[in-house]
Amino acid sequence: IIKNWQSEQVHDGMGSSRKYPNSTIEACLQIRMVLKLPLRQTQGFIDYLLELMKRPDLKSPDYSTLSARSGTLGLTTPRFKKGENPTSDIAALAIDSTGFKVFGLDEWHSKKHKLNAKRTWKKAHFGVNNDHYIQGALLTSKDVMDFQVVDQILEQVDHELEAVTMN
Image (cartoon, rainbow, N blue to C red; front, side, top):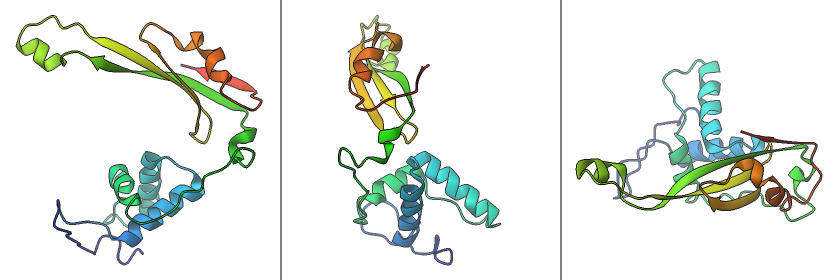
């Protein structure tokens, strides 16, 4: 795999040439599945491995390339049924939220035309375990804080927890 890390240039008629052959993408995704890493951490881990191997000429495929190409390789990600999930014995859950705009003009447009745009925001609250699996989720208005939805998120978790943290 290392010999052909970036050697294959395949052009399928759309976009630019592929910098990484399928074997490289598959190796990265296999490492990801074994270590249960998110895509960004997989990219960083592979870059670190290449650095340890003293191969400054090689670089990991970026996380968006890994994501886009994963669907074309036919790899299957393990899925677990209720009762088989290895995360069912998690001890901790982290709860955090993110906001997103529902409707309204973007900031650039408002600034350019000196408009006072009225925006509506929603908040998505997530309960995530150590393996980065979402255990519970809730969509609320922008004014709801994480501590206000703890009970509703915990109702979605079907196993015992030792700790819950929030930001």
